[in-house]
Length: 205
Length: 205
DNA sequence: AAATATACTAAACAGTGTTTATTATTTCCA
DNA sequence: TGGAAATAATAAACACTGTTTAGTATATTT
Image (cartoon, rainbow over all chains, first blue to last red; front, side):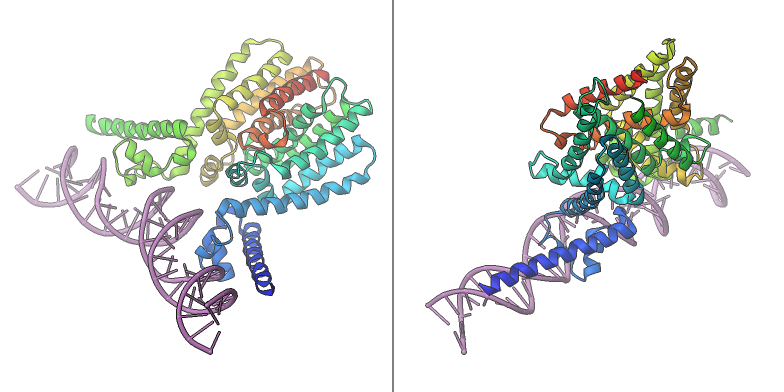
């Protein structure tokens, strides 16, 4: 059946076009300017057409959030080349924080915004694939650190959550402007110092 | 002037009434249901009246955020009774996390939501009084820990930001549902383990 | 009592996400 | 090949949102 095949392709193409327009708006103007109407206008379709390809806005934002995890995943996978688990762990922190600060809007969507999780919840799907995969990369590295004699008395899962919390906390506070007004010092200086302290803590035990 | 005095009181009373209604809605139904119209309806005034007492919605949410800091501050000030700085620091972590998990909507407003910070920015006021005060309590305690020989090689400001990031990260990831789908284990178990690991890390160096 | 200032609101404006009813087009099958 | 059925797209509406404007009562002052 050549026709249904072509129709399927056309459907997929327009869905991709919608997502691409959403991504462009999202990255250039932020989540606040990424409305269904603005997406529709960008691709010169009516707003209602969007709903023939996506159930709701949350689903679009979830797809964008997935793209973010692909990008973060690509950066993380480079670290597989680092054989020493401790060095890999520190590099992972660096990579994670750099990604967050270079892609604040995307990081916000991935780890702070409610929309992508709303979509997952609606699906009755209680696993967060994308996040879980990234977390498992961390856990694996922490396990290797423990195997090589580090982090005595800790279990990998708990410690991984603490480490993740720590780097997430640093960037989340910055992204949501809780860092700026906290001290008379330059937020950039605070942040730099904090990252060094974080590395120092990792190394010290 | 008895009349202007009474008028001033009436103005203050109605402003307080607006804030009280906003608080009630906010705590009972969440930030999503706290619209200007719903606040107006609750106190049986028109929506436009709200704007005679508040510039915009951000200002109302900023006032609520202030109430949250008063409550958190009250819990923190109890810890002044703990003389050992290390014990005080650990108790501070406990208090902070308990507050966040018992008042998720309020914590979200205080440390995650954009609205209160938008208000502060609009005021051209680059200090976040409420947050700064809470952070200084932490920094002071960390300084005392350092004075008593702990945390060798660290400076108080940087380490304080790391510790804050860590506890904020833990609760922020949980509040925004990034904890649920990360593992097959019960999120509650993960969280409990992580807090224990956090305390263990604090004690270990 | 008339003029002025204050308090409040109805209605509108410019948005938002989403749904429904309608129209145009394409595909299918007798 | 022509008429029925399926598909694709949309205009318009619905129910919201925060906010502003113009107008109306009420209270105060002169």
